[in-house]
Image (cartoon, rainbow, N blue to C red):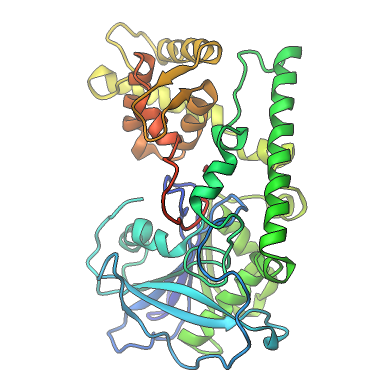
Length: 424
């Protein structure tokens, strides 16, 4: 990053915060609107690998009536969640080819370059939430001399209009309760047997049926005139508009991105080749497969799971090396990680046949083997969370599934939520 000023976008995915995955950011070569030293600017947008946006928002879901777009920079004010981060809104055309359609209001955040570098932790979709959950970590590690700016993509968080298919988080949770979509697939001990394959196919058909129900409801409550403006191509147009407003018409876009953010990077480079500054991507996804295949097809999911078993073995090997003093799954008599693996595998088989009753949970119920497998797969992406996963799994293997079920099953909300994130 040779220039001494600018803005950077940073997309990513795969971290634990399901209400919003990892961030997306872009960079330009002009000073931001506030006076400062030779600091630069980063824009981050949280995007999940899941294509599902928020489905139960309570904001207005109709297109706003046409009116003149606001001119000038964003009116940044301290965020209520964290006053060291600035919040604001930017009005953009709902349809860049027909501005008479109306406006969309993007909810945005900015971490100023002067903010002390602190790690406040942390796919979904709210870039605003990701700024609070991941932004400072990215700021500290990758771009302390940039302002870090994020926004909620269309249909998500506080950006208006947004998805409101079910009316509330509670209504959505009740609609999905008990379905395979809410409880995850239950994987039989021998998935390749005739009975095992039949069980998986039955669950897949149920999931597809529930997705169709969801699509029908969204079509009725939202309408095509709203839904057609949600997508990656419009996201790129919004990114370009943000960059122009904050950095100038001729400013280049610099992008730091991961996972689904690499899809965004591919779209950006192809749609706006003359606007590209620097692009850095990690955890690269397959753009043609993403663009041309349905999300739930075998080919895409198989690619996403390509190294899952290798990573699982890595997790167990690290646990064995850490010994029982530091890893709850390890035992003093273990001679290799295979000993841990056999105990876990045997437990999953037993759990498949006899789900564990969990009474004291945010949502009491049965803990099934599929839920444990899902939590394993999710947390394999977060090495810093491996010790906590080991503790939760060890407790479950001893008969107490409260912690692990709490990691998978959320309480039915009594209040409106923001968005559905990856893994929910």
